[in-house]
Length: 243
Image (cartoon, rainbow, N blue to C red):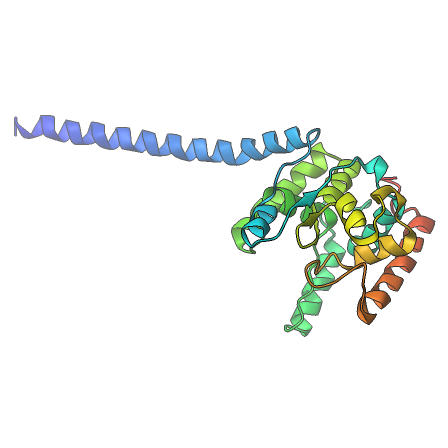
């Protein structure tokens, strides 16, 4: 018995040390998971976000890279209204999540499981595009929710729209409004016409397959609907939080 007591005490001390190290590791992971995103979002409130996961993935696939950051003041209001009309009509009303659109998407997907409709807002798309990887899973969705809350709280609507329009994919190797306007219409983003802006907004869901400069019948029709929606956005002040 005399010999076993020191050994037992050593085992208890070792187990206690391992337990403390494990708890410290868990706390460090939680702190990094909570504070890291806050720091990143705070930095990108002022600095242009660098390469995204999608941009790197596309370059690995062999696509080029054309991105020309411009402030929101140098992007045509026509494009802002077209994007809001096409992607998120309640952008100025919600706080990152459009619960009405989400419920509609869930109902649609239940009724038509073969044709999935998304309910993501521009804020959610911005969080995903800038901070996260393209592939869908529950981990990414949870992080997307957290980043959406953060950018809504720290950035505000004008900055969210500015980052969104400068970061989304608009063709093979083409990112942001300025590069998209130059690549498709040989004009700056500030000089886009209503029809050109509507066509660019029309191809956002499938930028590698759809063409704004040479639209097929479907994109022509879709662009016409978006141009009409942009008129409604202007008339009803649905972009007042940005413009």
